[in-house]
Length: 357
Image (cartoon, rainbow, N blue to C red; front, side):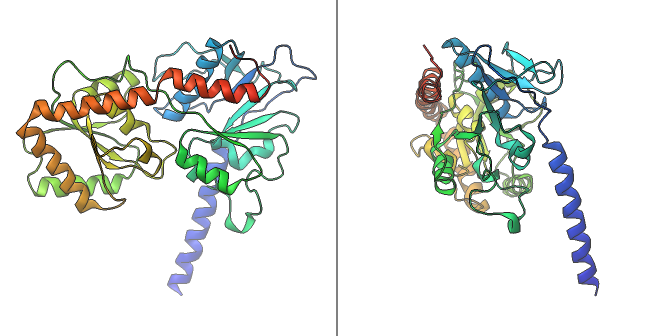
């Protein structure tokens, strides 16, 4: 009796949570025009001024497109809104003043996937899916049919994504839609090694796996493995502050979890830190045993051992240890460059009918 009542209460709580989250994911009201003045790429950006890497990527796409001569802008629903946690001068327009024509293209983040029916059907849409494992969030299992949640939206032209892992998943799930990969770009002016070996600092971001993170730190403290080490969580920091913390860290812990890409560990590598932890599947493309240690997902003991071994390696030879971080930086910055992103965007938007330089 009690268990049945508890089960019904949990169902009601889950239904309430679902409705509340769906309200948060409503796109702003969009307006159309019978013709396009100048064919434009509009990236719909959530009005969230929080350190969310996917929003920064949206801004970077617009900046890159404009540099190659494509008319592009970030589109926000709240007049006057702009993300401020990273430095930018990106072109912004607002839905209250914008009319989208038939030759324009609206790039919609997967955040709005459950509420795509709110977007007018005469707008050409590209889904920018930066976290493929979240695609079916808030889609009840019983309502999933062929192509869900993108089925029935004939105005969707393609899917953009940011890692080979996510591209594989999306290509398998949606064989009827073309999937294109655009690599992320890491800014070398911000994320780069310091002049000398970093200090005895361990850093990590706090957006994933809070319980496992707490357990790991308890294990390490129980073994007295953190004696003399500064442990720095990166939370509510600007992009520049994050880069400074990573640059001063000998070790960065990765708590990636089924990622779209996994920018924090990649940026930590670019900053010269030795990264230990979970690759989050997508990070397999840049976690290299030559300069990082990947841990099997959920293996807390393995994570603790790898962290302890990294601390010992640093103490035995700080200069040699920092060389591993510099190797990581060289490899990651070479692979995830602004030039590489521009190459990927140029190929995609040429196929979409635009004319990048």
